[in-house]
Length: 199
Length: 293
Image 1 (tube, one colour):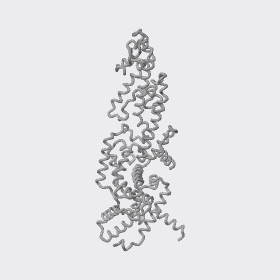
Image 2 (cartoon, rainbow over the protein chains, first blue to last red):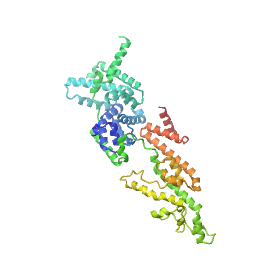
Image 3 (tube, rainbow over the protein chains, first blue to last red):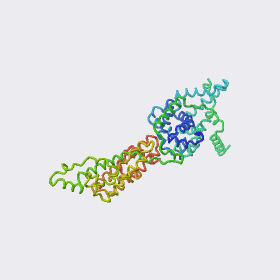
Image 4 (tube, rainbow over the protein chains, first blue to last red):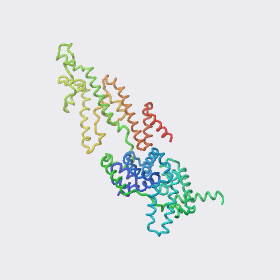
């Protein structure tokens, strides 16, 4: 039954204490939220904590939820604010790692890339892994705003309007960020592979 | 190829990219993505379930599907403090009346019982702290002056028609409470019935939360005696200050909960109601920034 309901209606039910409504909301959005936080967070070890805090904050703020805005935007806004708070408090210590050189993050991505190509032939698996690695690094190297817009649009499937609402910038700004991100990634993909990368 | 064609080509590619078409979008789709571990899922779900059990569903669940519900009024948090303040003000005013203005009935009784006029009043008729709990019939007959002076059997039959009218209210009060007591799970905050907020609380409560206190307070407040009226002004100021303080706390909590829009809304209401109330500098600065955004 819950699967047929919109996010907003489920949230209204959850607000009144409906546990099944929460479970359905969680199953719909936990992966997307986690993915967003993972790409956005400069520290791998923050991701679980921010995800957990976000759902806790959703529970605490559920009475104030108004269904005028989309539930997903509301949820992501909570996570985003939490992340911004963390960055504000520990800003100096994460600046270096925010450039995409977090060793723990790289290790996790390598593991994911390996797991996703386990069934392919060794050569194609290697090619795929190299491309994935380059793309991953290129995304991590994007400016924060561009990376956020890219993740929300390409990975989370948000509309430009939703992204504008979530990030608090005009629609044209979102478009511009996405356009720059696309160009940079395309350049990275089209650049010749260095010998060192093949090794 | 001229620059115009380049731009058109770029636009077309961009539109395709947004639709998830093209080599880059495809590569992005195939990129392995992180996912929450099952341990994290279990932890979050267990935490949410425990939190839901601790906080029972709201009483208005039946109307949840009817549409958006307005945010709870900020005075909901101030209900208990206001009720306490009203009770205290009532007790204070009654005490002052007892000490300063013995009623005519009491004076008459005193004179009848003790012919010596110079005998100190407290020695003759010390006012009991609270009258004994009367039956409903007694309440109906008891005049309002019963609260000011200790009731005496001799004085009761002299109750005026005005007093009987007022006493009708005190008879109704318990019956109004009946359905409330019969509710299966009353919310803890709403539980304390406002104890007849009385003359002093009347103006404050009527302005602050008409739906909570005014219906009870207004009829009683109308014939308020003079001493109570003198106390009313400072009490009203105190209540207004308390209300302002509660609103500031609420705004700060909203900011802590990362709900700047709600905070801004409350802030506007607060500023409208208390334009000159002093606000902590950091909060004022933050709200100014929010207003400008």
